[in-house]
Image (cartoon, rainbow, N blue to C red; front, side, top):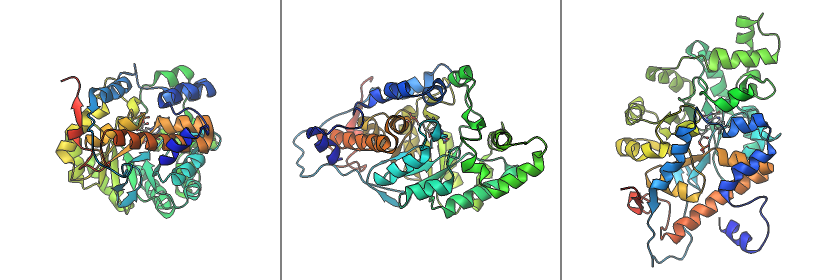
Length: 393
Ligand code: FNR
């Protein structure tokens, strides 16, 4: 983090601007209409996504002066059994080859270089084995789009491969059993999930159980990989019905390690997650991409932390764009933040180096924000709700 700041002072130029709010516009200039629509598009009118951002402005950090310190604030945190140098991770984002030819491979390399956990999407355009190789000794977690119960053996096979490839925790996404009403993708007639050259690799194509079962079941309909890709997403991953809390038991049996439920937005569900015995939740509304007219994710965070904080680990995402945003979410009780779109803008703008630039920017910005606010570390005793006020009260 120090390095970012020092290099800035030494006039060595970054790969692109440090102004994090400009990344989206710059990335859009480099992408096709389809990729732009998929990356920046939100559900419906975009109301949830707008609320996600606005929620950050309601809370303000209150700086304290003459806090004696010799060091820059410590950002390290203990999460799911790992000590991590920064309190944020890379959110699962699918089909990254849409954004850069190296896709997930570049992102997973930057993750391990910067010591940031990488959460690999089920909808990745690279296999778990290749992402694991690129991530090396980095911390990596696997995100599951949960196949229907009738395809439990496919789920088991996928999870075994992820485990064997060194993915140490399982993030189960609960808010996407169908894709949201996304006008930009619909206007473009675009669905990256139906393209066999883009997805399918991670979940299906290289999975022997999947290939065998699907050919047996739908053989005469599936002529080629394109057909297999369509079958994968329409018949088993997004089968238009969801799972129940009881079904979590099936995942417990198939996955030996921490389970984190992604997409929690209500206190009631957070309580059920505790009862279900999972290790964590992600307070997230998928960046506003799934449901229009929903609550802001940050708005729900303190209520959920009040109900279950301490019983499990609370991750937060949806709308983080700068260091101060991370500081606010941590102050409201998140144990760790996930960042989605910003690192993908980095991927578009500069491949692996671009992703590293984004991760360093967030860490450097967070560290100086804390330092100049008189907050000696991002640990809860220093960075808690007592450091915030609500401006609208
Ligand atoms: C996502 N997200 C997502 N989540 C998930 O669980 N599996 C996935 O495959 C994807 N794919 C995906 C693609 C794209 C293009 C985006 C932008 C997002 C959601 C992601 O994990 C995270 O919840 C949001 O991106 C967080 O919001 P911000 O940081 O983008 O505002």
